[in-house]
Amino acid sequence: MSETILKATNVSKIYGKHKVLDKVSIEIKRGMIYGLIGENGAGKSTFMRVIMGLIRMDEGDVELFGKTGKKGLQHARRKMGQSIETPALYPELTARGNLQVQAANGGVSERGIDDLLHLMNLKDTGKKKAKNFSLGMRQRLAIASTLITNPEFLILDEPTNGLDPSGIVEMREIIQRLVTERGITVLLSSHLLDELSQIATHYGILHDGKIIEEFSREELARETRQYIELETSEVQKAVVVLDEMGIRDYEVINGTEINIYEQLDDVASINRSLVLANVKVSRIGTTRQKLEDYFLQLTGGNAHA
Image (cartoon, rainbow, N blue to C red; front, side, top):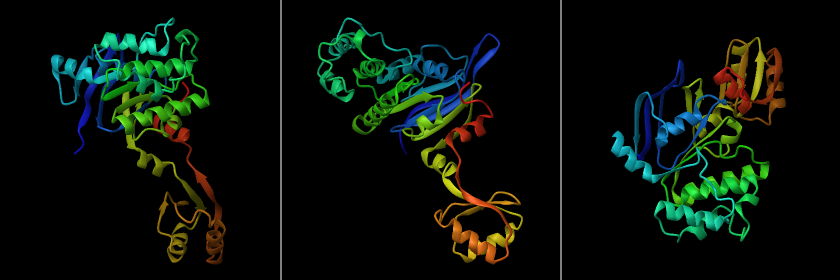
């Protein structure tokens, strides 16, 4: 069984009368890219701060690398890096200069700086000062700063927020390389399911401080895959025709709808077979549930709130 990196059980955080986190339980195993998805204000950043020990939880338990308790967690957090609270960058220093300072602060060797500059696409910045960096460059430098101590578990809060499309793609590629090349496990957040769907291996939907759904990349693909939507008042007769055509991957949704998940290019022939069998077809065509619609279906809210 894969090693559990993080196990949070019934974690709650209350500010005044508002329960920002309400019995949140999550388990992240080594090698995962776990995407925490939720509207702004859902509690994503609060949960990450609790895990990093930046704020105290009011209820629940946290286990990191198998360690619990104050001393155990303090020791385990040495294996972690985070960009929840962006590491202070020194505006008058270069990318290399910033990493040298971070290495000194972390009590580690500067030997890995060249590799980090290459990994973060900052090796050609030369003598350019951080104050003149683009937003994307600053965010990559901030992540490089968290990596200087060679963490095994990395927490990133909205790492693509504010980036242009090319910057978003670049950030996704970097995160994937951290996992494949360095074996780092990642917890990252976003308010956009579509964004995380292109990088995460597992997902948790956080809504009003509660985890309301968890699923894997494969489960998400099944829920949002393309299919033929068939509407007919004669579902049972239609099912017989589909079986005779050798179609097995379909689902009867209700008394009038069938979703067909194979032979997606054969809508016309399926329709013809149904008509020849005197099945009354009200509507037939291919469709795909959009990720945004799936998110709204789960939360019943506004994804951009």
